[in-house]
Image (cartoon, rainbow, N blue to C red; front, side, top):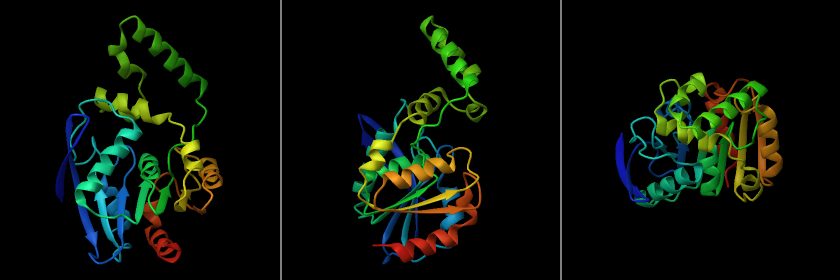
Length: 240
């Protein structure tokens, strides 16, 4: 594990990363999803992408990278990651991103984009969720926003206020127009039983990205943990 420190908007971020694979191979940056870290991505791909020079990165606020001091949005994460790439002085021909990491990867516009159940297509909220959001907004207006945890999902029980605000920033970003502008050679892999980012979202992203190929695989949002070899083989076969 290594650390790089970058500065963005007057704040310093310590980014933890690890390099695995062939130093002479093509370079691939691998980005995890929300709530995960580089260890999860290593578990899926370290044995199968050994012909590539893979850099596994902990995004700010996750893994061994520094905590956030202020809330961010996905574009901030992309700019921080771009500064990290510049500091490494590596030309990444491939960038892979899972879920939230998929949106960051899309913004970085690599030659070869690999999306694993990417976020970025808005799902309709259940009525109960809409009611909770409306009540929270009212409480915030009257100075009772400190009760935010009562309106958060179970996924954020141990999350700091800054990370919760960041989650609110990123969870409802519509990336449809961004996907539609992508010119990268794109491979999209999806779990057919994914409930976090449903299969219909993947199918829509595949329609939006003109130069893309779409693969439906058995499994849920973390389907790739059981399909690392197939994904790696497909990347090698389809690379440009």
